[in-house]
Length: 407
Image (cartoon, rainbow, N blue to C red):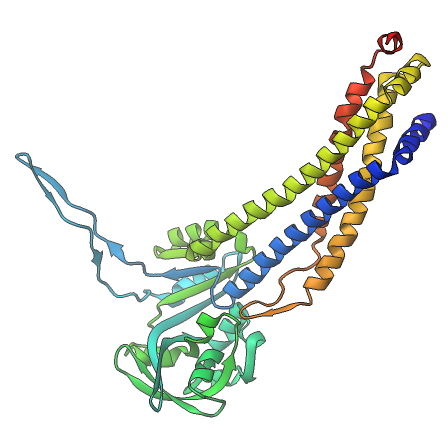
């Protein structure tokens, strides 16, 4: 065993340039693998955090009914009517009962009603189209953590101020509004109310910040000329957001209303996210494979150059497994050095980029140290380097010393 290790060490350092090239290949492959996959996780976290600022894990609402086409055969004549959306009220019946029922489910963490309505924000000659979301402040804050992205004012005041409103930073900027100012709100039902601005929030999602506001649920009901039991949506958060679609099916069967998971509600985002994952995984894994081929080629060349040495070793009594051990040890040594170097470079790159402010809706570059990706990189890197060494080592183990000496 010790002799095999000594021989492997000799081969490693007898051609330092080739060893360095192979190690560098693994270093680059490993660093890019860890960096790109950590960046992918960062993008996912950043995107999900942005979505969950305004979107619940599950939304329950009264979905529109589409009438089915009518096909009738009467003496070889067919009557076909086009499917149409059947108009109906979008209110939920007995929302209190639904909320109480859902609150008892073990996987549910928060349940809160909501009334959403389209409005116009008016200030002098300025007018902006947007939405007023009627909420129960305490419950909505637990679900969306609204307080965390308040930039001005006090969110808690909304609970005690029936004529208060919290607006997005985009609305405040466009209409030159600040804390304490009054803004006129006109709903789709031609109801106009003057509300006092008690807070301004900034989600870093420009679309939300330029169109969204929060009011008490009673104010939203008044905008729509509805009674206090009127509710358009019930929002639900669960312990594991990844199980939202499965839980949504259970809730839909339980309530009889449409229950939509956050992934279904953001299908375009999820499709783009899936494509991004495939591309980054493919590119990073391919680079590691290329690094593995580098080790394979170098060890293959070493075996060709040292064929006489291998024949002598086998003639001296070395078995095939001893020869395999020599070259696999070389590959693993290169792999370990490359993995350590790659982890170091990836850490440096992540440290630099995580402190870069890119602005816009993103803020700081969405990347951080991801232990799981480091571990995955180590396992994949060592796995590839092992087989990159094992394949040519297997070839070396089959060398017939007699045939070599005859040449």
